[in-house]
Length: 206
Image (cartoon, rainbow, N blue to C red):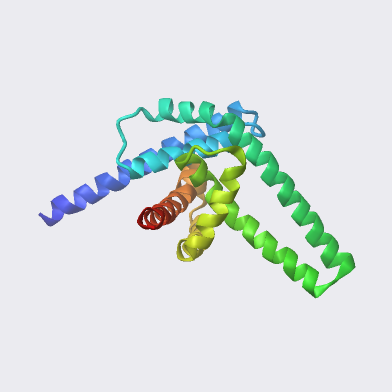
């Protein structure tokens, strides 16, 4: 019985490793098909959408076909959000650099760092939100921000998971090459989904 359990464990691990490696390959392929610049955000949205469907036990759809359908569906909105977030990130980086090197105001620098922290938190949630909801363009960032604030424990857990994954990949860099995007996205998707479900339950009970 113990041997059977061990064999099943190995089988489940091998099956999971195959699935995340294949999903990572699709992410790389569709990112490249969009010439990286226009492919990375819809490919990342599709990656999170597949992980979300797996968490819902929706495993009947062919992975590549499902990936491509999400890629097409979210192509415009994900690229639009990507441009907006890239501009905001660039603006914040420029302001922090100016503040640090020239203005040297403690209060202004602290304010910019706080705003940058909120920006990073929004980045953690934006792709899970894109994959879970169909909203108007301006509502995605708002929803990501509100859910992050409503569920701080899940947000903190996301940051901790990224730190742990950083050390994991530093010891096993080959895993980053073969399945990096999927492995990184898995805990983020799971925690973001948990945060969304908890917020949805609170709204239902009100």
